[in-house]
Image 1 (cartoon, rainbow, N blue to C red):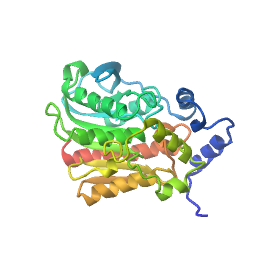
Image 2 (cartoon, helix red, strand yellow):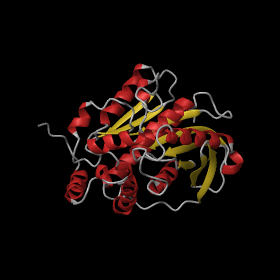
Image 3 (cartoon, rainbow, N blue to C red):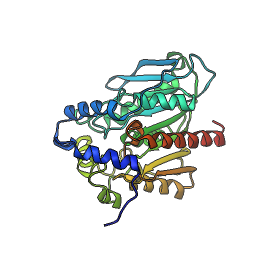
Image 4 (cartoon, rainbow, N blue to C red):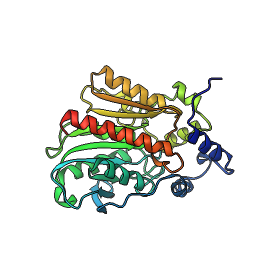
Length: 315
């Protein structure tokens, strides 16, 4: 059996997690899974930053209002780019609260506005509900400076896991600029990109590394995306017009190889990519920064890559 390097803090966290009794996520209802996820946040995640602006908003969507949350280190600012953030959770769990601390950290570190999107969840709202909401929110953000109190000159689509999937899909959908506002960068963090679940990492880390194969199957079944749909599985699409990309994976993640495959597809298409794999870490590290102190160092590295890419592209 191959031994995979595991960071000391990750090893300790997994030992604790795997010792906790009770049913696994795929063995409970979506409502129970959402509550379980929310309950984990104060145990594993860092405290949020106090910012000049943290404000809840809404924007219209095809099925009703979409909740948003604006984060900014400044009350007012000159025109510039903004991060549009899509939370992870397999399209089934997660919300503005589970990723509140992370979004505040992104805003503080990058000194950019961050607008988080609270999209509809499966199985109550199967594919393409989440993608429709995320695209509608991004278009609204680009075209409504008065509602935001900020003039946005470029969008940075960013998200973790299922949110990384949607960061890619939204960037693809917004290839043509919206209200003169282009997508200038996409930042998918350990994204789901492929309908093929036979990658080696899916077997290597099927159990015992927070995200499991059974949970991934449960998420996919709940979201019920149509096989071959390029919006649900962006690896299947063409990549010749993809924006500059900072793509992050974790070496102990069952969907690690999906991220690697998408990075390769971008490189093969001649796109500008910074690929970062966090060796010895797990899926979900971005929202486990109290339980995994090394994850905050990872985030600093990611922020550095984002700043460098923006500087290179004049963002």
